[in-house]
Length: 450
Image 1 (cartoon, helix red, strand yellow):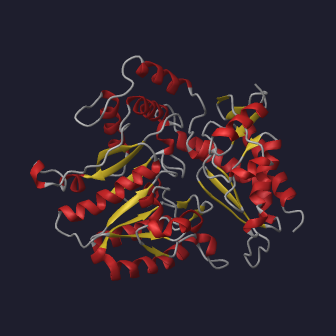
Image 2 (cartoon, one colour; image 1 turned 90 degrees about the vertical axis):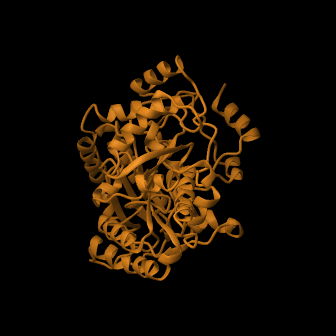
Image 3 (cartoon, helix red, strand yellow; image 1 turned 60 degrees about the vertical axis):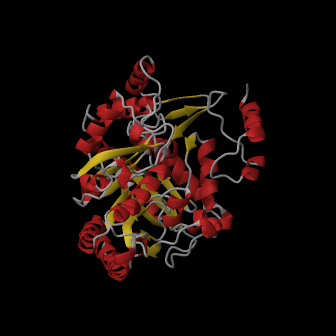
């Protein structure tokens, strides 16, 4: 069957995520038949460079042979079993390895199916902890403006991005949002560290005023991904860890998008040398093959739930596919690939090539900023760079870049006026060159009319 046939059938029955379906009356869906490495291929043989790792999940390329082999072997032994009252080798081994890799003090793993669910687990776990230790008045959360933590109701509530949450406002709990340390808003010439620390005053003030009623602060360490890959300095996290400890509030690190090497270290928290009380992981956990998420917790949090059944302190949260053996096998294979070479050193080289490949855009009259953290690079377009005036959302400049790139065989998914790269770690220098050329052309084409 042709691409057109598959697209037509999909539109007739599939409600696609994060999509205005009417767009596809003029913007064809891209049916994908197969994939290998950094490339996707449609049903008519056209290939697309997957520059966003299929929504930030694919670390080592599609159908990595080591992950495929581990999945096949696991499927011969055990496909699924409930994790309530039962256990299995992949989930035990994975939990041991994750606790060994994670920031110090994270000793327990609670599994879910996706990133939003991992955040729900962390929020409920923090709230329930304070209830179990006799402080039920602690029931609110502090989060950053422009943050994104998922689209289930709890995760959506602590998000700060109005695009996602405003419609559902009547359904949501009301967290305390404080201004972001996002360094895009710093004054000309101001250092990233100085700006991020200056912004911390808002968080300190919120903690001083509300710590008595707050369960936890939740942040995306270093990169607010869905907000347009907005970035801030690690000094903010260090100051935040100190303040949460001082005020008796949990720190939740949502590393769903930035974990597993995306920022240049295994976990973004490592840049600050801190350990959160709860850490959420998903996306790259299985190398982009199967859904899996995990919330890591400290021993102190775990012990607050450990009691006789009659005490009513158990954490009664579950998912049918919690700790699925196949997904855990894929995650174990992904961690084994990390052990095969120094991927962080290789990624530093690839990140430098990405930066150099698009550096000429720093002089473009409609590029407000190029920013980078590890294997995440973002190019922010603006109507007026000097005044930081963005293009109106209705003009959909990012969509124009997306369409141009598809024609040239590159898959991007801009966030509003922000074009970004988040490719698999196996991308080659030549493929980075292609990606850079296509994006430069796309930006020039998109901004030609001012």
